[in-house]
View 1 (cartoon, rainbow, N blue to C red):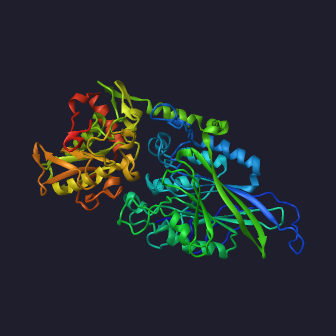
View 2: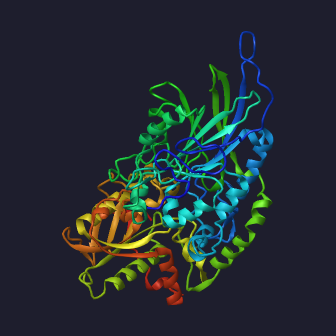
Length: 605
């Protein structure tokens, strides 16, 4: 594959401003020149310097403090705010307080997917078009002055050409030391950047930022990266690169890792690497001072991990997603034996709801924002009744039935007249948001798109009845075991073991109970098809999104099942098109109760 002009090739790099060291980008100086240094000798004070590395992660296309699905300012129960316009204000305050040249700003990935703003400039008015626009995230991050950003797995959702175009539009490198060209096994993106901070002592501090992304990309975006890129594990690649950075004179090593800290994986053994490996990396790889953690959408202000080999404490921090928090790594270094040594490092997070949006950012992208607002508010049909996802995590709701109906009809139409036309079609769907819904009356693009905020596409796989039951048993892990007779609190009923809503699937076309009084693996009761118990050997066509089909969530059987059809159109757009074609949505035509929660045969609701 063609590599970007800044890509690492065989131990050399061609990069922007600053002197180049073999293998990456060295930019500098990034700090104000100081006076003459004080000699460090007997009776003389040690030379010290302090600086701050700021970090964001999982911005997911958020520039404005705006929810395009509700057409209103973003708000949640904790009254968080979102967006780069807020982050910009926080960054300016930190730079003013600590000196702009004593700070760096980095990101840990998942930048260009997640909102209708980012979708619009990927699909509706794509940045890849001839004379296309500049991506709003590139414009905002350039204006704020980012120094580097690691690649996230969602960077690959729209394909490598769009990612490369976004990379060209950024004034900072996109880092991915473990995003390798499949043929050469060399980094396909810049692996690292080394920034020079000029101290008052005449000796620059060299801060290396190593970027690592998630091995799950090989599964989740197989269609885009298969045969083109491979993604080895973070610990393995950090062990390769950190010593190199130290040998090149890096005084401080910061890893920007699109990988959570828990040591867990959602894809089981489909990939021989850990999904959330930041903590393991700190524990196993000597020479790392701090890790900016991403991917998990968690808030970790400050977390220390002791390296097993050196005993050094490594600080980890993960700022909350969408620009809700800004991490600050505060470093104190001291000059010892001819080099700078980290004496102390800590971390904290700042809350973006404490500041106003930066008018420079909102005015810069006001036109782009207005275009997207107009786009998502286009009316595409009407609905006879309102439908909501509020209770969908524990009840069979018509709005989820709608998603499954659209998927079933789409797959049936695609298979009509073929070898699989006579097989029954089942469908899986998840509640992605508990605040989505279809209103009574006019239905807009944002209403329909809100049901499916991800860029998933639709596939059809072959499953047996036994495999469908296994699939449902795995999904039912989502519920906290609750004994019969015990009061049910819906706020504590779901998300057992931290399973997110998007990894709980319901399946249409069959009927079943989920007995939450039973242990995991023994909860599916009365699984039937057209009124009769499901034959374990029966064959079904299973309408499933590509994330699940590729192994996302580690659901059983589907990744290895025979694929009989696949679509390149996003499910979101298929729903929008279905509503447009129908004109009127009437839940009475498709709503049914195909599943329910029970305890010892008694319905919970």
